[in-house]
Image (cartoon, rainbow, N blue to C red; front, side, top):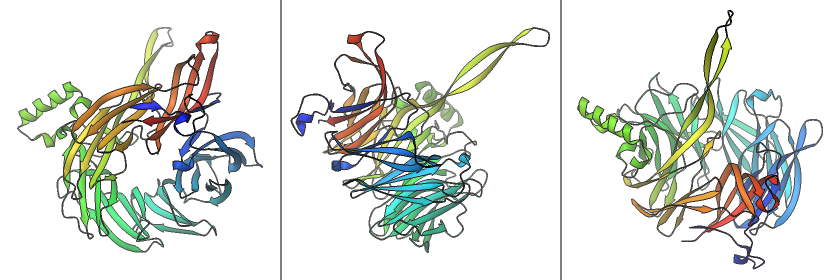
Length: 505
């Protein structure tokens, strides 16, 4: 179960919950936190203070494990750049800032800020991304930054390597011609090899995946098409993980229909998994969402029944039909010889608004239009695979009350002994579910997030997030509107908050 972390667990100072909060004018501000393991936590935001003609100051505050402030410093970042990604390597935090493609930036289009956590020294690198390209991957190896770009116009995938000490740049295509879209990208730190999964449009109805291995200078080592073995299925989102020196496991989602229309989320049918053994793909496995043992409670019962009737009427197998869903794929986690893959399900939510107008003759008529409310998250599906891609077990969890404009993972997965805990934060409550293989050890429970005072009452919460920190500790953050009931109904405040919580088995 999730419980508030107390300072007494680490330094014995007080029995108040470990929480910090800052006044906010709106929830559109840019506060973010990055867990830095047992070293502490970084909190930063974009200020309104200018630094020269084209830059603004970002404020960085570093906290220890008891959320005690260690230091506060600022760094100038070009005002048109926004924070996009980060990576922590040893005691250095690397932050990537990039310009929006519509900003019209010329010259510097991205910056990488290196922060030494102790004593808090800053080094800034400037860079220029390829024209019409946006970052899709950011990795650090030794003293080099590897940035994956997708060109929206030329449909090319490229990798830029920035030597951080010197500022020198290398740019090369992903594969021989780069005519593809980068799906996932990793750096093999042991072999100093780049591994990319790219998607290519083979026809109007068919897409294909290719696994590409390159040296860090761009030299091509191998290109391995990921075959669907003439199944007629399209391989969609995909991730890869090293199983041994020469063996990989590729897993992701697939669809059975045509590609999604432009501007709409991809619809997927199930999971796929495929081993790569010494640059050879011996097999591929497909797992329809409908066939997973623990997926049915996430699906609409009426849709399932309708699908079954359709299947029987056509005298076809279930695998030829599906309740296609939009999913957000996590990375693959290795755990005790198993490979855990998770996908969060969601759908775009709209509401209809109507208004009355009058024509030339004064006659009233009604017009209606749809308004996009955000993405409604509904659940998470988890499967465990062996090194050959065979399904070992599956499980799931319902997601409630999360409607957001950002498509990033909401559920955190972590292990305690042989148990997998699925957890997320919503409306001031931590939801958690404990599973072990196909078994549910503890049904979904909800724990209230501690506020600063017992007289505080939560009115609203937005942009809430939950992230693993270290051991059994997590960080919960977001914006909250709070009222102090001891001071009357008018005493309201909007804050950015951060709580430290602990999971006790």
